[in-house]
Length: 257
Image (cartoon, rainbow, N blue to C red):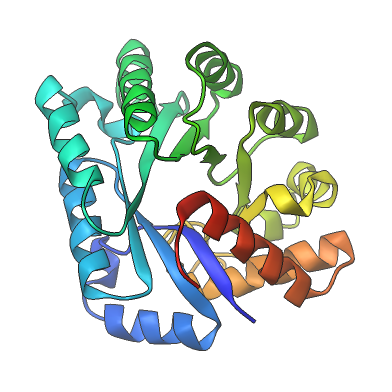
């Protein structure tokens, strides 16, 4: 069984001491590719560096809405340069976060739009962060349009109606640890009803570890628990879910499995 963890932050300090062992466990669990995602310039550069050091790691570069306040015109130029490096497969993570408001809302919108336009210019897929901003994210995507290369709503947190709107735009939906939580009934329904050819799986490591590892540092090997939960919810074999989500990841990110 082969899997792709489509969203992780392996440059996080919590992996500093044991990243080789983390990658070994991922490989043993069948995780053959990991998309390592930046959230500002430094982390994006770190993601690119790790992709150059490890065969199974790919990089995405971008400014998270939390870090939008530090984005400058020079940042856009530097992101564009990073995006052209080997094994960089997406612009992300980008989007809106109206839960924490670490950056002003208007600044978040501006930076999201600028990065969407960069992705379209480079014809690269986008990895979208959306927290408590469903309608605002949809409005921007409808007005600006997605890159031809497409995109994914990462760590999907909406209901079936929002999922349908995202699918209509051509987005993939990526499910993470919360789909394994008992109280996540809306996500469970999304997992059941979204076509398998539009689903991805991710860990968002080191955050949001799935059951039965909840409360621990998350890591890419745990994506197997998420695939298993999708299989249970859909009444399908886990091998079917793993194969389909891996094929979807390869289509979107052009990664090798």
